Image (cartoon, rainbow, N blue to C red):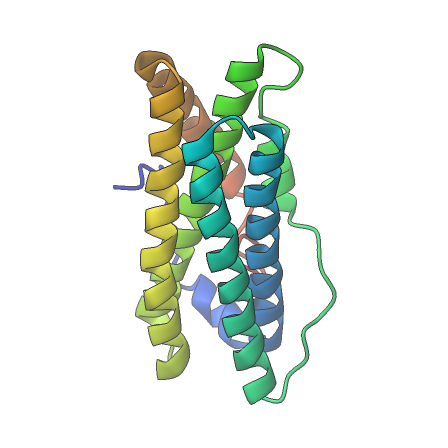
Length: 193
């Protein structure tokens, strides 16, 4: 369903389980960045009322997820670490159309967002199926469903606002690019690392 060309090796969970504090802090900050992205899309596209409505709901949901992760961190006697850079997301961002046609840039931003949600969904699935900790396995199963909904929403908006044929072609370019860069990841206790 997600169209990702390279699956995460389930052994990545072994790395994650050895540094629960790191994965939880990284995850919390990913949720904050997702909320910020939704607000940014509102700021750049205030005339698209349906998008604004959806992004307002998304920002609320992402902040609620941040809160949920933070509650797990506190419950386990851990601390929320400092915000960290997400090299995977930064590399994806460089692939975005910039400085050209406003609509093309907007569509690319939606596809960029869809791809991050798709990879997060896939990673959450791997965590839900392989975590030895039942609380975290169930937590990530629930969030996996949410991420899948976000992925389809962003892709749906891209197809709604853009030419479907061009969007499909560009989405395939995104998937090929993501396959090339994701090969460098999966060795850190972070959502995309």
